[in-house]
Image (cartoon, rainbow, N blue to C red; front, side, top):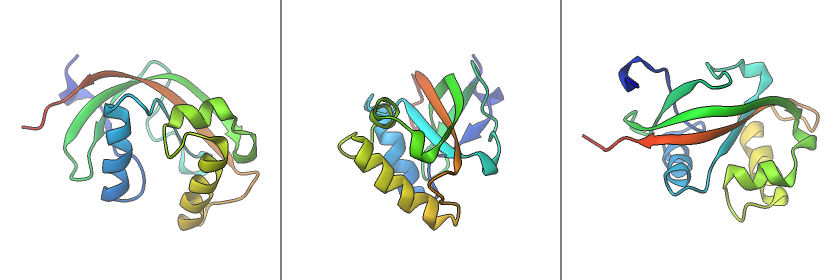
Length: 128
């Protein structure tokens, strides 16, 4: 697979958050992510591979989407929260952290629709 032909993306809304979330992926803790449906698909598609960038815009990992579903914010379950890999991996932590995140983006509503994606880490990319 030629990573140079794949689309790229960064996690989060800042270089700091991109680095933090990417670190969780590289540690094997993070295998899921989500974003507001109102933001579109952002290039995601089932069985599609994309390159995750760090906060400096450098390619660091190739991820493959293995699940992509729409779900209301208040219907995200503990299993998905755990797979997001953040904090103590609890649903309570997930809800609070994502409420703050989506509020920062002026998108939060308890009934907002999310794209919920699970992915596999296909390979890591060494810094050049």
